[in-house]
Amino acid sequence: MEEIRYRQVFLSSRETQKENSIIDISGKRIGDGGLTIIAGPCSVESEDQIFSIAEAVKKAGADFLRGGAYKPRTSPYDFQGLEAEGVRLLLKVRKALDIPVVSEIVDAANIDLFEDVDILQVGSRNMQNYALLKALGRTKKPVLLKRGYAAKYKEVLTSAEYILSEGNPNVIICERGIRTFETYTRNTLDISAVPAIKKLSHLPIAVDPSHGSGRSEFVVDLSMAAVAAGADALMIEVHNHPENAFSDGKQSITPDEFETLVKKAKAIKEVI
Ligand code: PEP
Ligand code: MN
Image (cartoon, rainbow, N blue to C red):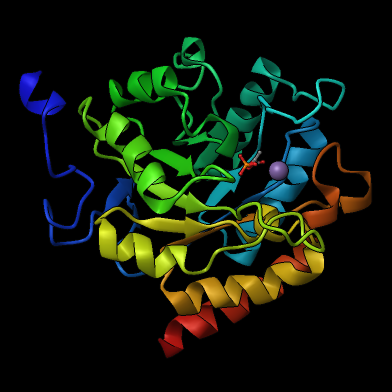
């Protein structure tokens, strides 16, 4: 315990480990030099909705299906997610379509409920929820840790350290845009985070251009920029009817647009 408390060089640091960490999730390897694509709706809304989007994104080349069941919304009057029922629906799709899934956990008390969820997402608002991070550190579950919208690189890596120091090495950092003076976009996607996190740490880095811009029309171009910068993974919000989405419709692309995105992102990956 003492050794952990007084550690000078972080476990997440490049100084501690020179080679890139690879997170292996039932054969899907994040951080091995390839490009992992995570896609799906912001929120699980119904059985039909999640099945139909899952089928489309899988067909287009997604490696993982995302879908929020617990939604930490800015306003308490906005849709809060289907909660346990949302997790159940996501796991039903996982089994039926044989696609691994990613979903956000907001409370350590739900860890058992998320047992079969392949990657547990910690959202931007919870990046500094240290009790949650420590609890996830005591599991071996892969964690997608989103950068807080006002957090420095070293702060998100320090949050990752809470997970690593408890014994769980399976952390993926996710850049999802930060708050700046610009309001034309919902957030400002910080592409510098990709080379910076890669320099500071051996952990894989994902980029979420959906929250990073808040505007569906920019998501394809920003995805290409993220891949060109060296991102290990992309996380994309896709909805079959973005105009009717319960959350984040404005930044959600359609399955057809997602198909184009996958082709373009893979073409950029080939070039670099
Ligand atoms: C999400 O992925 O839907 C989400 C709420 O993300 P963030 O925590 O980055 O806002
Ligand atoms: Mn969202």
